[in-house]
Image (cartoon, rainbow, N blue to C red; front, side):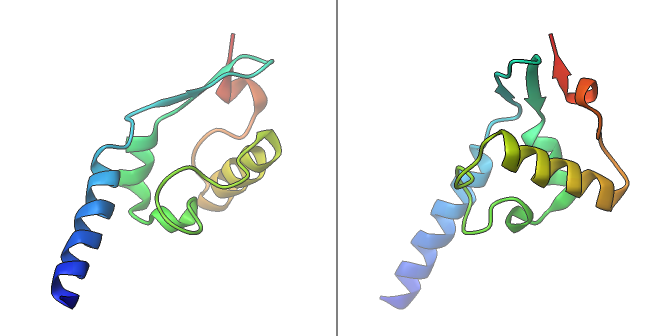
Length: 90
């Protein structure tokens, strides 16, 4: 029974990662923001860097959280955009 539960859990999490969108577009007043999700998955290989609890929507994700999460990570990794117009496109 435990093996079956483990197998189902692995399948669900594996499927959620496999079905994640290649690119997510967020509407914003300064211009839409395109987020290449699949590229981030391939480079980071650790979903918990963004998804604290589990794969899926990020709890409380809004403008402030996006700015903190994304920009802080880009600065830490010395990669990716950090300026407003680098992400926001009219």
